[in-house]
Image (spheres, rainbow, N blue to C red):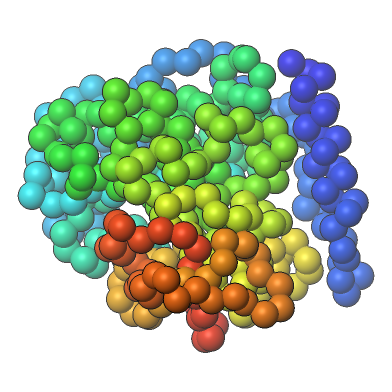
Length: 334
């Protein structure tokens, strides 16, 4: 097990050394090598005290802890069967209460027709524990797979409470997108819809198996938004319908050293999508070739229709779509 961790750590160092430096700012201070202080789960049972779920509803827009063993109590918290349900999963070093996850939460609440579940697995993904979160690349129990299994348990309990699978969407950013994808491995029927916001790339692309990574087989409809493709986010087409925003690599308004620009661009997928859900901005996807990120001239296609990017895009949409967002979208992140 330790040898696997050293291999992963060595790969991370290669990525760090190969990253360009700007304005004399090094990204080395961002790396904390106290890696083995990270939480490494030795059990694989759900529910788990380090994976928590919080319910928000239009009537109760504040966090209410959900005990998956007693989901019959959901209506007392404001959960309504008539509404759609969204499960929002944060990524590495995130929490349910950090921006831009809170932007996504508030965007769905603003629609008034969603029960919003926030998935918090932050104790297992704290900086610098990215390698720990990815430890399922060998056959021992991982934090990452546990997060997917426990979230799948919540999903199952919601359906047992009467919700239709068609009315449940898992929205995940970065590693959270892969958590959404892995949930279907723990369900008797795969999910209906997943929205992946710049699914994580570092180490995943080299060490992650097909079962580990979000793919179009994980749900009947998988929608992906790319904003830092090829660096912190996965590149190329992943889902049934992928949206390559502003070329897919760097986003307007992101400034600072190279890693901060990348992180800002990575988080912009969540901020853009939250704004689209709120219907505050209009994002139009134009059919284009399947590459993302894109270099130079973009090759557009005319055999498919343009689509509006939000949570209600036509589920018959297929292929890669190019999206231009010209204005700078405020996207604070920690």
